[in-house]
Length: 299
Image (cartoon, rainbow, N blue to C red; front, side):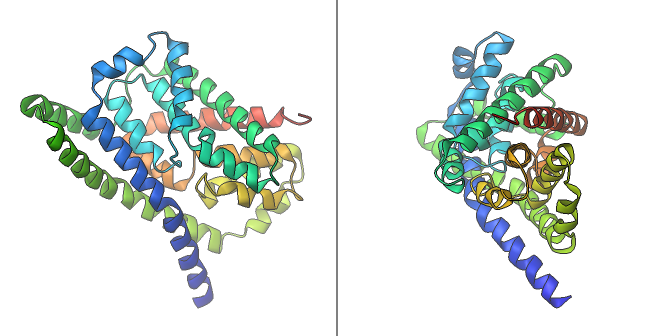
């Protein structure tokens, strides 16, 4: 039992150390958007067309080197700034996968080969675009939790009243980043503990033995990605270790689903967005990742 607890502690610390730099980056980007980016600026660059705005949001993911933990506060802030929900979600789903850091780490992990890196980006874009299109038809409101909306009105009113100058905006950015860090950080800790416990006491070898068929292998690897909750900057090195056990479809499902939904960012999404919306979105992601991975055999 003592050995198991020590193992759990080691896994927990590694998850925290791995995710923390990207949480810090994410909350600072979120704070900069809050203080320096206005609704008018976004309105000028955001396409009005439903499909073009989703394409724009998808492409934005390439500009932010954030993992799936750090991307959630940025997405929440964009929605607060009146970015269409579907475009913000497209950004949230592709950001942890198509940014240069993750593409390069995937390239290195799979023996300096571009094949898996490009397939990963392709499946991520496929899943994000179709999920965002579905969301644009089924969810018309921003889907933020009620207390988040109330906080938005409070901050918005304060900004209009004080019209802060540059130095005040810098101070405000730091204040917002600190508040956001402690708000998001507790979910990282809770998620890390749950993930570490599941990896310690849940026998992954049992799961792997169930993946005998193509469909089962894809589903098992998606579940494993959710449980392991590895940041997208490092998950390719874990995925490559499954090369001898599973084919390309299952490994791709692991790489894409885990970067979009894991224990840590599920808790963060539940904090920011309405529960019904989060579970509906995850259902769509599961369907599109599975479908895309299933038909990718032979590529």
